[in-house]
Length: 295
Image 1 (cartoon, rainbow, N blue to C red):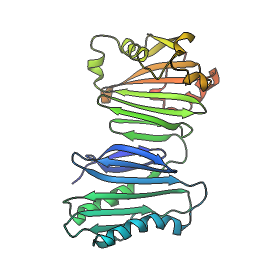
Image 2 (image 1 turned 30 degrees about the horizontal axis):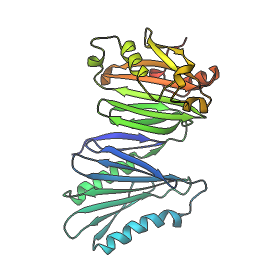
Image 3 (image 1 turned 90 degrees about the vertical axis):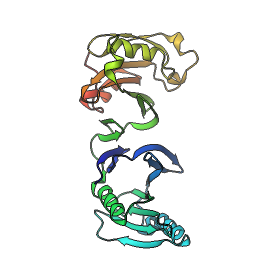
């Protein structure tokens, strides 16, 4: 039996097999796509869009019908999956050589969120493919109220939906997510192997050293504080070579770090903001365990 883990992203979440991990995500013409790979190949393609107006059922089915047409042209045998959870419809396509494709979409015209998925199976049985798509559909949630969950790889947190994802950088040992809110920027860094990082120097010192070499941040020098605090000395000449924060009218920084013991992680947060009222907005947007201590 498969074990599963939660994937949460941009206001929705679902469970997928633990060996399937996000490999890439793109957005073009208003349609976003996330692709998940196991150790060998692509296993899941998940497309979604949030339309500005309520979508008709005919429009929702149009993209799904393109998948069905391509499978028929390839000579695939189609089997509808009955009694799918929620508002999902799914069909399993079996190719002549034995490969399988599970296609499914969420038919919920009462809101403007549309998604389509394609699961790829090289050697799986029809029962396994059906079990996985039912698990995904049964655990699928839209998070339209309150802070939205984010969960990918070994990181998870809650953040207000007002903060929009601007960039990501997932590397071995370090995962960074950058969020934007009205010109402000929130940099969220998660470092693995905290016990090794902090073996020779305090966590605050290690994080300050990292920020002083972090090219996305300019106009400030960082030094270690205590209890997770990182002191910021604003030095205007440091904007030379990177004036992007000034173009957004955000010359100030707040930096802090937190130990995440159960995951052996160091969390490093940097908030690039304009005025003091922005700090109150941050406090109301990010989950308490990752917030800076109050000054």
